[in-house]
Length: 523
Image 1: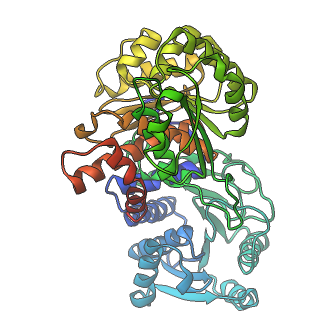
Image 2: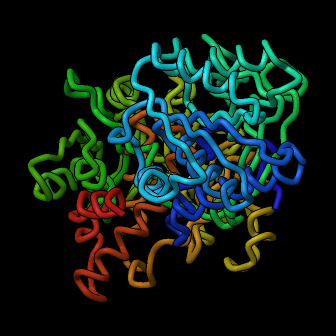
Image 3: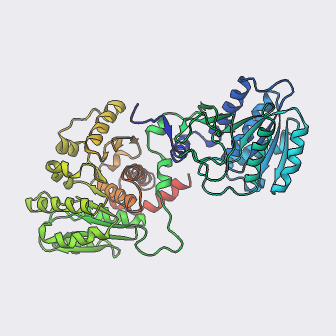
């Protein structure tokens, strides 16, 4: 299981796992329920509550606050009463799961849970006096802020953090401070505090430690890791969670060319469709500019596919060194380069291919090698080691490229280990296509299960290559791009099967890229 899991994760990786769990059929409300329950049982089992002891729970309007609502409910089932302090407006609770649990408490649990809503920092003064006077309050629970905290903390959150720390400092024997998932104000990825943060006696973090978390300091004296029901499949398999962060948004003042520029190099006298499918995939994905460079013999055929296609051509039936100067300038211009669809394996083309690899290295351009380029690179693997490259072979192409025999596609561990070792050896990203796609950069590995047998037709691999280039061109890393492209390509195939039936083409897939993305995002 080594390729799938790491001991510590980032907050971004945790968000991916949450969304992937939902994609697997586990509602986020279930995860929140498990988080609140595991937190409440942990502090109960530690004996923090004496007879008639009560808890103060500070909650924000995000998911961290939602966890706090669940904690309050589970403490009530143990007979522990709570004062729940919501910092913010209930109407601004940001998630459906948080809102669900807020309404349960606010509408029904008036005996065991007292609620105070704070909209202004000045309102905290009376809360401080109330807590100090009622000696039954011994536990302070921090559910104010979750992950992704940067810069100065806004009011009244900053004053709430100051109040928690002040209560503890002024009466350390009385109060124990326990934080939900992360001390509010602390960056869980770096462990740094840019402004202010809650100082916890105990941090109960969920699923796995975050990368910046270390115990025995003023912000986290002790850390406990608790499961919330995220299965290993959420980490092993690519899901909606992997796609979401790679679908970047245009800036309001964006100009043409800022949302990706792709150069596609391919085509030969026998193959005009392959570079067309890859180009149209980029165009329909929404990339600003896609330039397709092909031999003159097929240039007009490509232009006929769509007026959106920008075609550059070199005279002849196959690309050769005559194209090097122009392609060098286009490589400089591009954000990502795709080489291979329909390229051919002529000797003159291989000479050009080697020179292009040199240019890609010189200008530090991320690139994708697909189809014929995978056969041409066989004798030149040393040239691409360690480069920002993504190779997209199917099992047969991988055999030609590396002389490697793979275990069966459904032997998850052995096939994963074999591909992971090759990716590590080459120090680049591999997307090995098949009934299951295996994606590895030698450090991490994911498996994609989306797709359908009806996709085993000409052109679907070219669409995938175009999508890989698209994700890379909008500033995603090759590994993340490969995960999102494989997932999306398979979902597009499933969409076409559902809406068009068992018989569809690669061009049908291209036409339905936007609709499929919309469906996935509205899941």
